[in-house]
Length: 208
Image 1 (cartoon, helix red, strand yellow):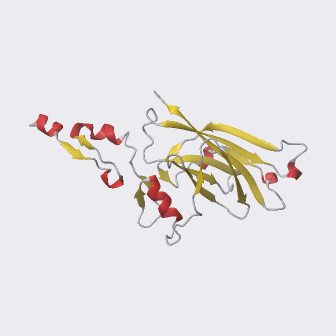
Image 2 (image 1 turned 180 degrees about the horizontal axis):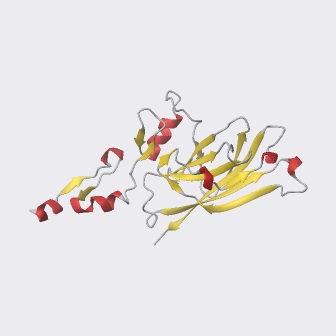
Image 3 (image 1 turned 30 degrees about the horizontal axis):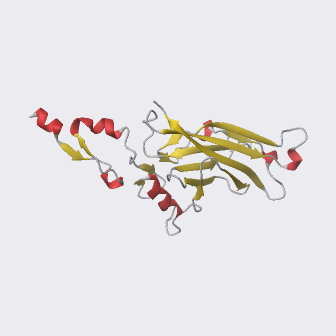
């Protein structure tokens, strides 16, 4: 009887999110840790949101939804894109969606309230499951912060950082204390009252 139960194939629990596989009972836990259709979560909604990265983008960028964000920005790998973050926005968030494969990234600029005026900048990959790092591509980011002309002279005109993009399955749980960079208020462009960022996302081979 145990053998029959183990051999029984059942629709996977993430079927409603697009997974079409039928999985052996004893393989449910393993598949759960690797399924590309594992949902993302956003608990700031009422009721809390649970769905695929694509449906999350639709939820957050549909004007009729209470938690409307600015429209998502379509990007391509290996291409740099400028972003201007207004000083007036205490918490700035933009969804970046790659045209090649629909992977969703989040650009988050924090308030800086806990950093003596400095504002943290972070870039994360939004995907349903973060436990399968050995089987998924690795994403990198090149982040450049361009200083105000008045900040030049004694300081560098721009700062460029590179690194691996961390993953996040629960939107709103981005760790801004471990942000990529905290920029100083003097880097604000006084004419536009904006901070100028340039971001490029890269995609590398799968880990083995």
